[in-house]
Length: 379
Image (cartoon, rainbow, N blue to C red; front, side, top):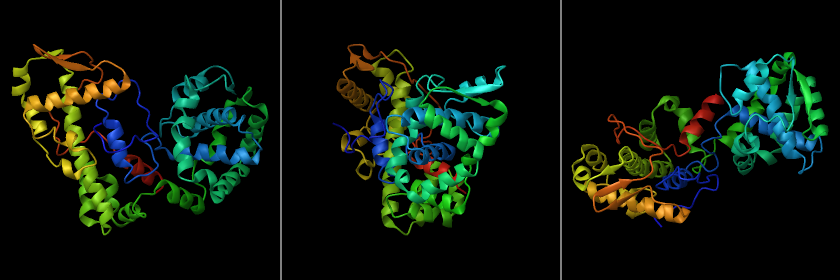
């Protein structure tokens, strides 16, 4: 076992897309700062929709059994509303299907569980992406937040009427005039200071007693900074030493994971490598030599020590990590050494950029980008 952190419950390994197990590692590191947000829970309008659905569940006495169907139908209804009202401002899962339905010759759209916007709307839509953070943050049980959502619903009688129909229909079809859908979008904007405060209290939390939010309020230029520039700035200015320490260790974690990831992806660009080619490759050598601070990261020493070695030792270490990860998943390794050198058998995700600079570029986000995206939407 190579990592000291447990797998984030919000993450499920998707087949063989994470050949080194690094996603578990960086998510575990990110949880030391951002406790509940995920990489895909970055849209405030999606939070508006799940918040409205949650409030309607109690208001319309929707049972646990009927709630998933109601949720999917409400998501469809609001997808058409946001497409009509905010066209061009943002994308969302299911937008292509919604646009196709709005562009056909009919004067209405049909809302039902059999008219889903995605191949599996429950898994790939708002339910699958936002349910866990919404509940873990406490928004689902915040009475003040629920009251705000119901007030927004009451403000839009047409939407209230359609939501009541959805609750009664239990996933069977209703038809909505296309000329009406734009008027249904009122709940997709913040309606009051009280609602904004609810979102700030729940979405912009951290493990350091709100120090990250305090820093951004004091230094708004942080919003536009790049990853390492932002971390270095906060580390230097932070009054709370816990915040500085957490960010310092996240920084060092990325300084290890990113070059190792790039080396592995670079190796995938060829079907085979001789030992001589590996030993003399300038990119492997340059990327592996950039950092040796494994003791100040959230990773085990075995991973950190893959850097600062000669090329062959680094590559052999990466191959061993991949073998270990694949064995755990009961799949074949992506590459292996034989008498001729390194044989590469899997090329998904192969990537190379000669401009990559491990001291400047990063690959993983540690949920920090999500946090800042939501901050910008709330301000």
